[in-house]
Image (tube, rainbow, N blue to C red; front, top):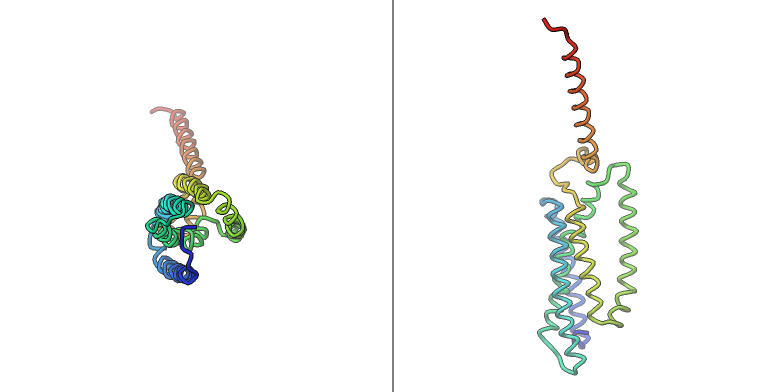
Amino acid sequence: MIGIKDSITKQKLNVGYAAWSLVTGAAVALVVTRFNRRTLYMICTISLLLVYTGWTVAMQKATGAEKAGGHNGAASAASAFFIFAYQPCYNIGFNALTYTYMVEIWPYMERSRGIAVFQLFGRLAGFFTTFVNPIGLRNISWRWLIVYVAWLAYEVVFCWFMFPETANRTLEELAFCKFDRIRLGCKDFLIRMQYSRAKRARTKLPRP
């Protein structure tokens, strides 16, 4: 779609992309636990949004030139660049960090169930991208990428408001992470109630 027709060149790009995915995935997995989880997810989603936005613009220019009977080499190269740039951005948050984060946010009794639900949605997403992406690209061309731009914008907002920070905490501490507000609210209520009882008891004591 972006004007790369030679089969040898396409095979080189496919092999290079697979090797690049292996290198970036392994490199990120080795260092990902050293940083704050929420920060990495924000970097991941924002960088993916920027990559997809640039990819959409580059692909629009490349396909527009192809339809006009020409070839926009710069737009084709930019599209290929953004395809390769996508992988390290994705690996920052949605590769090794995902399983680390799920272990930390799920209590022990719910951990296996939570990971199973995640795997279900991950497989459904893989099915969707495998069978639906070709249909979307064939029917509306580069405009199909706008769907992912909109979804990534939603992910940025969702991560900002919904992802708690779990770095530098033990699993025992994190077991109560999502109940912090309730627990602190109850604790504050009990303290106030005890203080009120003590105050009433002091007022009932006979004065010397």
